[in-house]
Amino acid sequence: MNSWLHFDTFLGLPIEQWIYAALVAAIAYLLIFALLGFIVRKLSDISQRTSTRLDDILLEVMRETNRFTIALFAVLMGIHFLDLPDKWVTRLDHVSFVIIGVQIALWLNKGITIWSSGKLVHVDGTAENPVITAMLSWIFKTIVWTVVLLTMLANVGVNITAFVASLGVGGVAVALAVQNILSDLFASLAIGLDKPFVIGDFIVFGDVAGSIERVGLKTTHIRSISGEQIVCSNTELLKNTIHNYKRMADRRVVFKFGLTYATEAESIEKIPQIVRAAIEQSEHTRFDRAHFKEFGASSLDFEVVYFVDSSDFNLYMDIQQAINLYLIKAFKAIDAEFAYPTMTLDMPVNEVALRKVSSKKVVKVN
Image 1 (cartoon, helix red, strand yellow):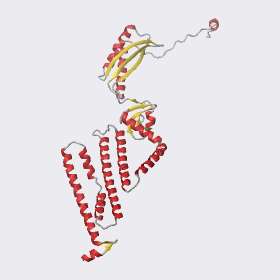
Image 2 (image 1 turned 90 degrees about the vertical axis):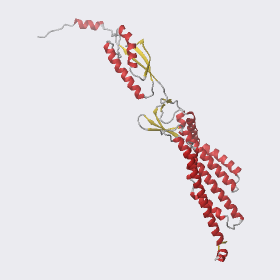
Image 3 (image 1 turned 30 degrees about the vertical axis):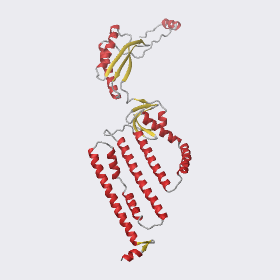
Image 4 (image 1 turned 90 degrees about the horizontal axis):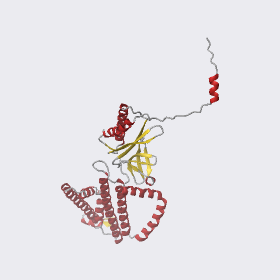
């Protein structure tokens, strides 16, 4: 039996070596798997005792270790026990390096994903800065895979300097071809850094008014007042002057009204106090001024200014409605009437026509 194992061959190698290689591969797989389980248990214990985020990320990363890469690495460790030519040993070393590099890249990629997910999903369902988080996640992943790829190429003997130089020339050509996309990409970066608005803000620019639903790398999604979704390029959006009403701490309200010229002076003197009482009936308002401003074309014009301590438009409209109703009732009580546009026309009279009309005799028919 021993002679058969020693002298019988498979692919030019004794069966005995293949058996040793298989045993080494199996033992290596079990040991690596056991070591991984031990690390996961230790990290789990640590994460339960601490409140930091780092150990939780490491735990999730180790739990997502690719079992296939472990099996490949174990097989390669077993193959090293075969009497292979030197060139094959070198190639196996390269393959081992590639497997280790891919697994490290997968760990880092998973860690970046978990980190970005934690940034994007808060307890209240909102994210502080989703654009920057998404862009940093994309940049970090690109850097990780680029470094791993270049390292693997250098390990197998590729001239990295020439390769990077060629990538630089190609990158310039690609940048020229996709300059519009890159413009939107950098515009989204500007939105993330400067934060002119965040998700949930109500903005107005140009003829568009609505709430921000999503800020992407190329476009921003806005839900308009009428209900439809507006998708706007980030570059075009930043070219406009943006009015962000969500960040308005106080709303300054100016409104005017006019009374007829028949209104008595005593009643006019009472108007500012009546207006003040109408405004101060709400706990969300702050009275500023109310004045008889000017003599209008057909009315005595008043101007009123007050503040609402909220950016809620519906609340503002409810307050203004209550003020208007209060004024209607109060003005009626003091015989003050709201003015409406009127015009008096002085028509010249034709005297000749008037004499003809007056000289006609009226004949009464019985």
